[in-house]
Amino acid sequence: MANITIKIPHNKTQEEAISCVKNLLDNVKEKYSKEITNLKEEWDSHECTFSFKTKGYELSGTLIVGKMEVILDAKVPWALTFFKSKIERRIREEAQHCLI
Image 1 (cartoon, helix red, strand yellow):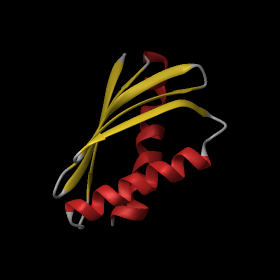
Image 2 (cartoon, rainbow, N blue to C red):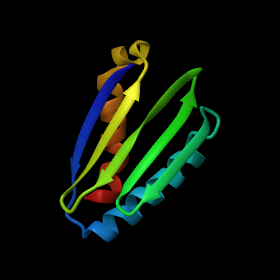
Image 3 (cartoon, helix red, strand yellow):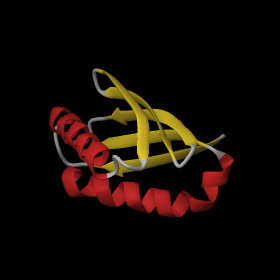
Image 4 (cartoon, rainbow, N blue to C red):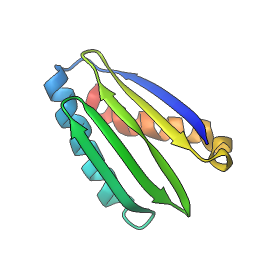
């Protein structure tokens, strides 16, 4: 497994950012429902632990919604690290629509 860490700044209150991230996760579930299975997310205040499967690979990690940024720390299989820049770009694009 390899780690991918992505930090996305935001200009919202922490509560607004949490709501935005939750809505974003709901949209991702719907948009990629055919590619993502066994999605689990558990929120504890401003932190979310998640896991899911896609294309036979298991991914897991945490989302921390801070006062000025969202930090995604994910554990991904080594085979997916070749797509790290594409994964990061897609996550940033999706997140920036609601966080900025």
